[in-house]
Image (cartoon, rainbow, N blue to C red; front, top):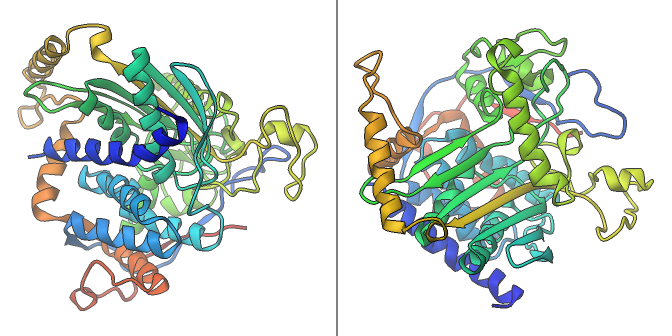
Length: 445
């Protein structure tokens, strides 16, 4: 299959994979010179609490319509909406509909390219580097993931590094997509720098999530999906919206001391690596975050660590190679084979199970593995042992039947987007009082 044909058919692969997934549901210290910092977030005072349940299908339709208004192709808008709302369906509220306002603002401001031409810039039989043309990660990610799976189908495994892209939703969604093809899926991404390295107090790394999914035969897939920081950045925003303090060990303020105020962390603090301090194995979280950063960005030629700008990235933010070559933001210079290093990066992997073992035997053993661990004697009978992915599958069951609970502060953001895009909101405005709601605003310099 040609490169162009593969990229064009990737949307079909994503649709099939998502259908499979649903079928399984019953100011910190100044950064180093030349590096751009995360835009500051402010929290407006107001009332907190409350949510409205909205059917996932309504949210998907709304998101797709907004993206189309922003210039995204209709089929790609539908794929992007599926990927985004999958986070809400699986109970990962920090990565779903709550992100739409940021996407909308960056699309309308010309920061993100609504119609990217995704290209393979280097490849072997089992590997590729993809340039996302500064497109939505929700568009670029599925295409790159499809390339990894196509290569795996021929070579046994496929590995794709991606540069020049943006926030791509939940990592676990991409890993799940590989299961339909009897493959093990791996996905990871770097992101805007909001995490301090161990013993540091500057924002230097993203939350850099990593995910891997394993299929069962009768049991639903085991999905390992986590940020390499103690919590994702969106969790801080969630606490700010709800007016709740952060838990100890999550974040630090600008001087490096522990900070419990979400407003102060959003403004000038930083998250801690998974594990927190050294005594609680924070070095392991730092190592995981470093691994993700290197595979996603250094390997692809994209922006790494503190060179990544913001929740997504501005196309004027270049990486180390162009900086070293003396490039300005207005006049990018040639640097070897890459015109410029830009954007956040992703990394996708797919491995054919039959390259290691009979597929059915593997799935049966996975079933046994999961049921065995769930049968472990719990410390508290009210909290039985779970396997990775159980909470998300439970959330999927409930939310598919009852709707997605969307916080009032997010509804206020959606109403702003709806009015700006000229698209009907996915809820009845008369059904909720959105006056005086506490809002989280991200300010870009």
